[in-house]
Image 1: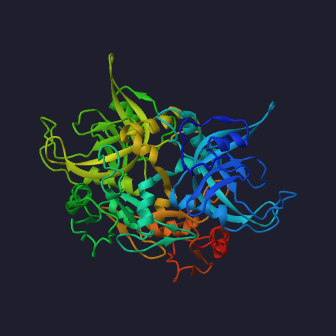
Image 2 (image 1 turned 60 degrees about the horizontal axis):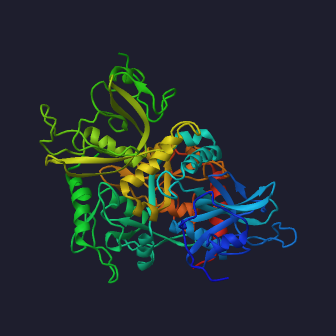
Image 3 (image 1 turned 90 degrees about the vertical axis):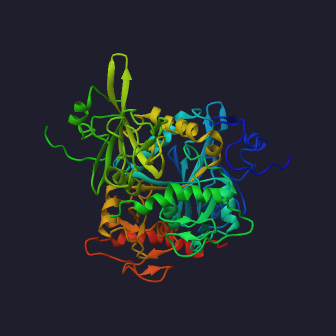
Length: 299
Length: 299
């Protein structure tokens, strides 16, 4: 079998609901580039896909939300958990998706009367991870996967978008979900991952590197993406920031002058030769977000 | 007319799509507690609803995404912008929704052949705000409103959930949307707003208060909400944190001992008499998020 490229996210021509007769077909289409293992991951990059076969006692499949159990510590004979799992190997790569925002393709094994087949069920994000004793006793690592509603062209997957809402409500129970609101959504792009790698996840304002098992940073677009701002998703329009300075930048609590002097905060932006920033984008942010605040109502 | 309570979020018996003959009916149902003004807000709390009448030259209505223009600076005669708007009054309250996460009810005036009527179109979040010169020249404040998919009981509003995706893609253009993924979603609840008020938006770990025009903090549930953790949405299970310490807490980079000593970080949790924290929730977080990291794979 030819070696296939390692791709994250959607694959051309493979929409959610696409069916495959067996693991070899999945492999051939590049949907899951492993013929036996349940997780397809690359060290240092993250996990691109998983196959849910229903064989693991600790997995929970709610549809739009999946509680997925890590690998390792299982008996080859009984498939039961006999030793503690560690946050290494494929498990660490799944955790990496949580800190990079890279999506995961999810494939389910479907048992039908005429035999089993595999179905590609769309992209999920790794929303969180933790460890606890599994059903058999030893510790397992668990990953909360949530269906992303924006897989495919507009309107191609409305059922999936609606189902993630219904399933989340089912999983959480209606009361807390009804009472909760979305305060902040942090999105990421390929360019965002580049800028974080360039700065090794250090904030360009304060220099801090947040980290759990893996380093964490956020990519902040200087002139925001999309309508009505229409900023580009390019390295020249993005900063690597810690979560706090990302919040403050978006709120216009500080701006950045053309010589990278910070405005509203002491100091200077930490820059890098390989990361050229376009002065026009800094001017756009100052004019729209920072400067109008100078006569804003203060509490 | 009787004085109605000031309510944020969904109203019982009023689903998206509900129609009202006139402003008085909207008022009577408590959907928009103003008979003339376009924004219904309470000082220091936020905005609960807006009515889009299509009368403002700077508004942009994309369906699932609305670019809404603030109030003030308009000529009563021409309805044109003649002076700069300021981030005060109703405008500041709309900005407050962005930092509290409180949802906004959106009502659209619909022009039909048989006359006009008003339609409740669901809950939106204030995703961001900025200022720029309006079409007539003077500065206007603009608010990006995004339809929340979780208004109403499971499955009640699938069209709205699907439409927010399609509209967002339309507004952003397909390319950047396809390339972007969700890194982090910060949700908020009424209890979250209480804990932030109790600590005046100061982080219980580092004491910092982030602020733009308004203070910003995040509420972190100690034992997470919903399946499979089933932590409660109560004051005893929530912390007031800055964005950085929220990220680190969720990643298990630090834990909190029963005597509020921080584990993995120097110092002690900043506590408050009125904010009692249940030790069992701290133990749950330590066991599931913090302690397993101590032998996690480090990069």
